[in-house]
Image (cartoon, rainbow, N blue to C red; front, top):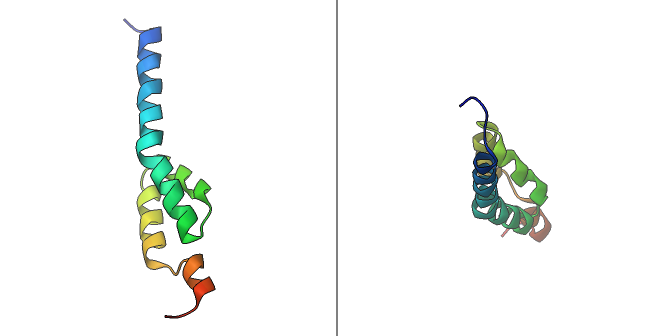
Length: 71
C-alpha cells in the first residue's frame, strides 16, 4: 500500500500533459503575441508566482505597444 504502481504514474503523466495543453500552450501564444518570450509560461507551474506574473503582464506596457508607439 505504500508504493505507487505504474498506473498511478501513468495517470499523473496524463494530468500533467493535460495541464500543459490546456494552460501552457495558450499562455505561450498570448505572451508571444504581446512581445514577450513564451518561456514565461513555465511560471504557471509555480504557485503564487503565477499570480504575480499575471498582474505584472496585465498592467505593464507590452513590448508590442512600445514598438507601435502611442495611439
